[in-house]
Image 1 (cartoon, rainbow, N blue to C red):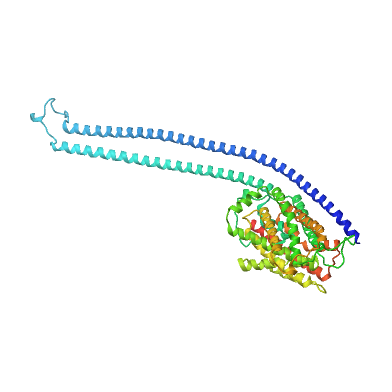
Image 2: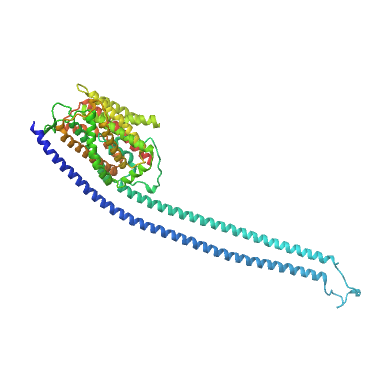
Length: 583
């Protein structure tokens, strides 16, 4: 028994390094393959975009040509119609003037020289006198009548011309309105075409960079390493309705993609549960070494579950995460660094405080759950931790007025009953573990609320990277700050190698679960992945039973089932509520 741990300690670093190298090689090869595929897709999309731009330019040129041709034809018709009207006007005026003048001349001729009357001698008048039938004043009266007649004729002519011009103006205004309508229709067609092209490009970019609409669930899943955080069943208190055209609607996922996503979500939850069991193995909570896989081999605990030791484990794990997370983040979302730079230069202090506050609350939740796992059974600690949806719903109701529905109220009651039934009993320092698990759930609910308030303003992958960096800083500051002696780290110098290996394993499990969960959300969606994440307590208890032989009582198993049912009900209610809003 004394020689066996030392032999294992000599072999474990080599195997861990080999495993780490294999994981890094697999990640590099996977990144290269996906980068090549995405590069090919981007090139293809660029070619299609250029072709579509050429089509749009051609359509615009055709539209301008048609518009110019229509204007030219309209102007030619107007000129021809004006010439025709002028000819008609001149003819009408000439005819009227000719008739009036001819009529007046005949009247004057009859009045001035009536001619030879029947019975009179030619060349003379009766009585030898000149017959004056009209006095000289009649000439002026005839001239006045002629003037009045001409003015009346001109007035009638101009009135008819005015009517024709009015009708011409009305026809012209109708034609101009038709042209405006055609122009508006052309603009609508062009805008629709451009919006469809933009929607297609956005959908293709979303496939390569990850969907933004899973920002809230994705950010929670990427950071939590104690339970599946996709089970958060509440909606964001800051409801920002986003209207999108029908052309930008997200296409339905195929059944095979959903199945792959669910399998990846289950694997991610299993790795998180294995992470919790590894934390339990690191802590020295039993006098005898831990019997792994029913006594296949034994492993003694390394450190006591204190505040300082929990901070040390968290820091070792974050060192590994911060070394590998930039590579993983760039692989999953190539624009991560530009988004972080834009976030820093934005000087949005409200968003800064929300991101930093969420990292701080998550840091506290991690430290407390480590302490809880070290003092009580792993499955019980994670089950009690899952009371955080109750706290989150109550805080959201009190702070933002998000009144819980009847389904949520019933689910909260079920979760509360399950948490009461799962409480441990008997000898042992279980009170500290229970209080730490409750504190972890309360602080984690604060993290969830701040994450939801930041949703939509920052992509989940840059948000996760900033959160990891914040937890790393808080862990280092927590170790350096002065604190009571019982809170300080207490490490046997001979166990540092095993502790470093444990930190490497925890970091690898964290990143592996993060990557699997990201692809699970991408394939199956955040709602389905969150439902799978509700089985975190059951998977943790099962792995703890298989690996280190932790056995739960019947009452505790029943309480765990109630908690899982309550959290799953909240997840289902949230998923169907989102579908109804979308429809």
